[in-house]
Length: 180
Length: 293
Image 1 (cartoon, rainbow over the protein chains, first blue to last red):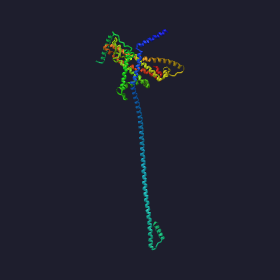
Image 2 (cartoon, one colour):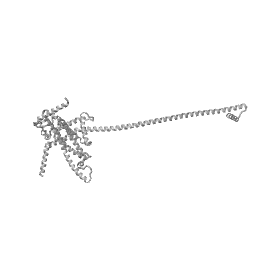
Image 3 (cartoon, rainbow over the protein chains, first blue to last red):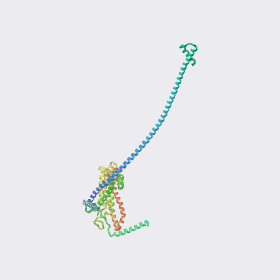
Image 4 (cartoon, each protein chain N blue to C red):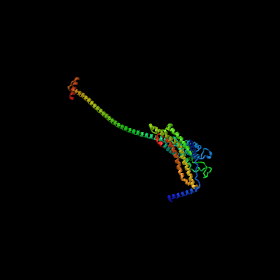
């Protein structure tokens, strides 16, 4: 036991000697420890703090910029897609309108033509009806004049005063001979 | 003169110079830089490495304040460069830790990386170790005003142990206490019957080893950084001694370039290891892969 304790004591002495050899001084070590703690605090606060904060801020801004760029690109692509779709729809609508206009114009033209034809036919029919009525009227007037003429001629030739019944009979006979 | 003959002449000159210097220096003993930082003017707590660290912090803060003075969304000038540096670091650590963790912990990793690299490079500037009080036998100041910040194990240990504490905090925040313990001790995979008992035992032992590994990490981080930076400074010191008063600058010049590389690599290694340790404990999947480390 004594040997072990003596050996341990010798080891402690050797360690102390080793520390002395390399100049380990507890007072200086403690002061350097405090010194180093102050150093890293000062460097953190005044040296690294503002610059790393700026680096972080710039990194954030770049990330935001990238994000915005992506969003703008997506929006642009959407917008282009929408524009293309709108153009396509507008073209289709325009084409449809043109077709409709063409069809409408053709239908209107047809309608107007038909209307004009109908009007012309009406005018023609009316003219024919008028002509027919005038002719019938003339025939009637002529018949009346012819009956009167025949009756007056008959009265003159025969020297007889004709009765109403005679006149009627003579007129019918004369008309029958003319029509027959 | 062709390039080949020029470099041959230079090599011969260099070798002659080195031999002459070695011969000159053979009489004296090569200087050894003290392994410990010195308490300035018996202040008790401010060492000459602390002064270097303060200067590095002041420079970083000043640079960032200038960069962030009129901070705008569209960067220009100093702001542009500061953002390039910080964003590069952020992306680098983000690649290891993932988006969630890097947002939470970048202030630590970014600060530590910039502090280590700038402190390492400041340690190479003239004036560090050559201004101060008193003189030793080699003509060096007995009490230099500045010392490479990371050539002081107290400084590297302060960083490593701060990370160790933060590692626990972040690990428990991310996993919860139960998840954290399960992450270390629980068997990975599904086992039944006797196999389950065996696996609980095996993973319990592995968990104990893991605890030892976790405990050793800050020590390893401290001594790795300290050893590399102190070793570099000692190398430069010896090479300057070999070159002598007139050619010391020439003999040490190639190693200054190497120290520039080492300063950057060590800053990277320290923060990279810290971030990997954090990632391993906070990762929720592929536990087997994590323990393979």
